Length: 118
Image (cartoon, rainbow, N blue to C red; front, side, top):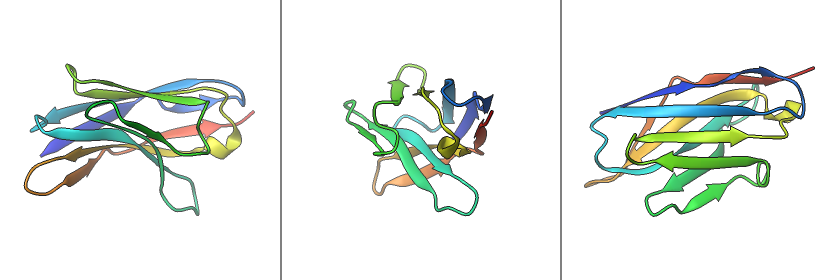
């Protein structure tokens, strides 16, 4: 079992920045991938970014050049620096972890709201 706790969401004006943090605790010795999904009202959940062991990073096309994901293996934490935010980024952001083993198992945090509005 892995517990994920997000922080850093809030209300920001268009063009502003926010930094999301996610700390993993529990049986986290086999974390293969950490990252973020988001879900806006009436829309499907979207992968925003993820970083695998070995620092292989993937971004959604909609956030490339604006968002940056980073991972601190010593702290079992993942961060999402979000710059040049626009109203289309408004969503609940969920941290996730994928553990490797006999099978791959996914865990999600409770989500943090990001609202971009003037």
